[in-house]
Length: 523
Image 1 (tube, rainbow, N blue to C red):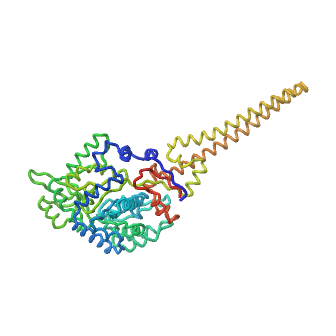
Image 2 (cartoon, rainbow, N blue to C red):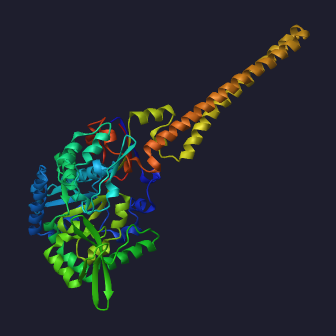
């Protein structure tokens, strides 16, 4: 790594008003969170979580994680053994099972929690902290995870499988890997030798971060779902999450913020092989009829409650209830996400209170823009620095044009200086011989014409030059901000890792989980 440059989030012009106010710890948002995610706030939540997270839950969690790793034929991180200790806590992030790990920020989220765990251990040495990656294995939107962008080219995975994506067979992804000009061996090994996408993703993440103690959790687990049973009962019988989140959302939108998610009366899906469909409730007099959309399945309230008691694994929380599920099965202190995730977590405080579950601290992930050697060379060629990257495009174009115009202004000044010298020569010629006047004046006019001709060529060359510089800037901007968005939201990290195998360690050394500034990294 050559250098790093830090920017306040607002300087990047890439973040929402809500997120900027959150990182500034604006008082208007204080009522929607437990506490601001500063280092000293972790002491209080440690005490709270230690008092409510029971030893038997730790045993079940430890057994479930161990079983998941063993069934997936993945080596266990050493930190799993710490889970049974009452002094062990987790710091968590989550993400979809994007193929080939998807966009760069997938790794930024994980590195943030790894660094947070290390920092908290230094601050609170009597406790242990395990970084966690929660796989969104129950998501059923295959289109969202089915592509990745490598070296500027999009690659797609076409599958006919339905239901929870974590249960998909990933072996056809080996063919996708072979289409790429370069590929890391772990992807073909994991996809080619794993029965499910969740197992393959665990192997991939463990390969890159297992040495850091990162623990990968799959929520699609019958034993873990049984820990969620108290919430399932209340969701079916009372629709508790709907009313709590609806009330919080009304308060948030009343302050002028846009709601990130919309709660439903039942925030659960029905989960089975090749099926994940939303459960709805219809009110028929005193009776509640529950239907599974796009199926013929219907249940009375008592039937659905009995199903929850016998097979809780058939219920899958949606975006509203998934955070509650996470916090019920983990001794968790914080959740790390990006602006969109934190925005919907701000809608959840009253839901956590309604279910009597401690809400975690909300720790924003780190943000970065990576400049490879080609980016840096292009930046230097057009005369820009890193500080110009986030300026509006129109301002940078104008900067290029004005710079070239200034060069042309200097040429006119030089032409005026030459004309003045000719006037001196003409005066001396007059003193010597009055008949030389016309000859001297003719030479002045001829010289001026030649200089104007040269100046015109220079001007055209400069126009071509600044047009080329503008084209180079447009190319660079599209490289760094694909389709106008941040690089980290579209480009795959292999674009940079394959030419710099130490990239992950460099980012771990650069990121500070308690520093919200945006960092530009010159590789």
